Image 1 (cartoon, rainbow, N blue to C red):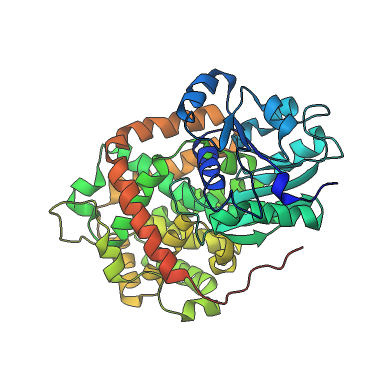
Image 2 (spheres, rainbow, N blue to C red):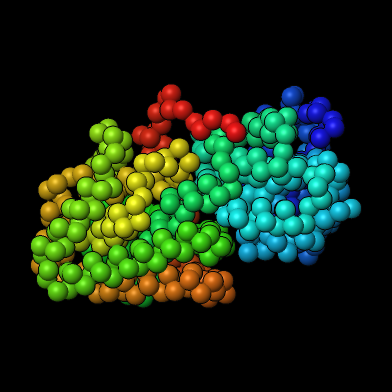
Length: 452
């Protein structure tokens, strides 16, 4: 860009969903509008034209946000344009608002979708050559405090000066910058998010199929169950496209979700058949492969006191043995795919850190793991739950493999409506859990990947 005076640049946001709103609010905070990035009243934002009047009314008293009718106007006047739209729609929207005479000459353009392959392909195809490309991805949801969270910066086609400007723009987030290529980003997000989401989606599907609210029955009491319930509800409290885009548009994610379904199915068959030694050998082999890193020599990410603290159950205290098929399958899946989850902690999501926390809690406590394996063979209490969970894991995998966004949305929103009454409390408790796990996993002095 010809002019590198960061005091006279404006930010544009196309797409005012939950994350677009969060970005707008953070970028117009007092930290963001003071030097060296003085955006003044220059956050130019838009959503679908049909939402223009409602947005203008919503932001009528916000002097730092300029609501415009469409993305054409945002693109023409903004120096850094962020597409905050569904991954499924990114190509169509960039084709409309990005080409020659639509985007401001010399601007920087980026997106914040969870899958960068289609996003960057759209930018390459539709943006003029005089436009630079720096994409971002906040590895958390809109209700999580951005401080200390990973923020991926992808310097796809841009100068070092422009990257420095983007760093200054996001300084108010107080996030940890992680510098990746688009390809590396997609691989890591598949490793850390795809199977995590599939597990929680499948749990919710199984509970819905059995007409269960798990916090109301004694079978789901205790620390590990608290995490399962809270995070499942947290996942379903978000928008369906948050998960669909990553799962369907990321080739690595499809493979991993398929493997998770296979791991669930194969382990469940071993349980049904009473194959104690085969099940034990397979689980212990997976444990040795996944938890061999030096990272596991540290203290557990989550302890009993932390796990027991966050319960949605009222008046239920007695714990019941559970075979934890979902947890056994996640480690089996990581083993089969050659994934060591600790390798990606620097750019992991809060949900992944919680999931890893309860998983290592089970697998690093020998007596607990042995109890779980015995329960899997000898106790039929959870057989019907596990059957529905197996069906659900396979169904979500098929939905993703077929690339069926409509089916994904329908399945997600039906289950979402079932659990909706408990979302406010689950989100509140989930935020407390996330804050706790962040405090446990924060390690001063851990180096970030070097800037490219």
